[in-house]
Image 1: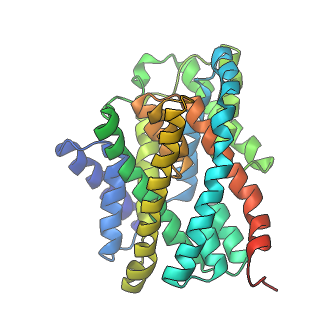
Image 2: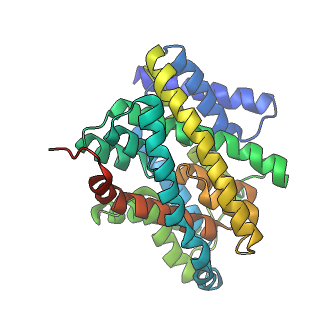
Length: 342
């Protein structure tokens, strides 16, 4: 409890510093940088996984609440860009695995599951079963999320002049309490039903589906209030930062440096795919970058909400990416592993 309280206080300090300096996304980037600096300084940090899961359900409700019959019908037009998601995943694998193995000396399981842009927990489970280094994979994925989340706001601001100061919602006091109660129901019930059904990303997709059903029936007419979205940003940012707790100099020199280099490759690939899609007139450039950036689903959802992007477009592509990676990664690993595990 002491470590969690200390972590919470450090994350709040990050929010305060970012707010005082007028920096973008203080509730997300503030906790990330504060906890990262504290972890590198050797301060013991600890997050609270159940609370983080609850915060993720808020994002699911936020997306689901935007679904209307018109928006749902428009999703059928996404197929040209959705078909490019498996292509991008394949390109990432073809570049990432040799990068980690030949330049950094990773074994195949560690390199492969460090490369795959899926959910952190899923990749760690698969990687551990295949004999990979769990700590290395964890640091690589944490760095991937960190770099993408930090780099994207800069890209959005400099290229599209996106307003990162937009409030993510209206104040809670302006939303009728029955609507707030319905959001809470969608959040918890949707999460638990999806979890029991074994749905990947249950804490986001379950509430998303539940809220979408009520929104389609015109019973849910509001998105979660700004305070709830800020809270979700805070805990998600704090969780990213705490992934570096206990990091050693050797891990920093090898694993994190390797991960940063890989992130640069991912950013270049994202820009290339986004430019091709934009030039073909298949989708707006900003939405495409948010949809194809291989960061965390929760973090990209936050950015999409703040800049006012097409949430259904962004989420559809991330869900497909995660589905492809989770379902296909173990199979592909067995096919391409040069030294199959006993």
